[in-house]
Image (cartoon, rainbow, N blue to C red; front, side):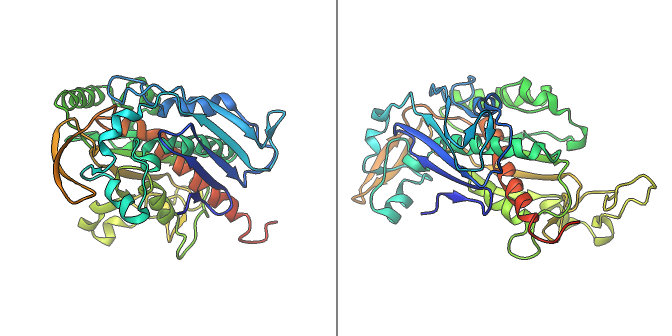
Length: 362
């Protein structure tokens, strides 16, 4: 089972939902990077449970402990080990799952693959693991700052409520001003109301997280198997509950003609080389970034664990009724925003390091 992501900027995560701790090892981060521990903690605070009434009420401080790889406030070039303690496990809430399989969850598939699973909160299949990704992604963000790369994630849809504005029309400074992380206050209010209604009904709802990368230099990615959009798609679809990925014009592009869809170069005298008038390509052409904004959308399904009775089966093949217990998100997308940003940062940091070895410079 692979627990490592990336080629040069590599991240390995470890730990289970109800174990003593989770964490990660970041290997390949260049030496001399100013290590902003406060920024890393703020990123974890954005993902942590219990932060609002529309997310799981599990209480975790997600305080990160740096074990290695940093000295006198800077990275040393050696592996950076980060540890996050689990503080609020309630394993008894999962005793009824010792032999029963939750519908649409990873219970049965893990049993089929490994023959032995940690049923406490889903073990390693739990979204608790993503805290380690956010910690690692925060380091990648610090690295990308040196190159002027900025990553903005936001919730663009919850159920049938969708943010219709183009990302160029949004004020990203408003994203963190509401608990659903939608940069439009009016749409955010409707989204929050829907999530609260769904929660009262003991049900869950899905949504979409959109992401915009500004300042990405041209040249990141590869023309064949390691296309930048392919690595972004893999990163996004590795996140719990992710069900779909599209970048640029996405599926809507199939309704357009080539004459409409082609991004013509901007011929203005002050235009940057390679800049285009439109951006249906989503900042990526031939698998390689072109310097325009990269933008994509990630669809997340409704959380599989619901507080309603459902029919299921146990390991002996017997039919039974099951009902969710414990603390769960009625909608994952508010807490998925920093996870999407983190995985984006890890992909870009890795490709930025890989680009350095592609040709002789100067």
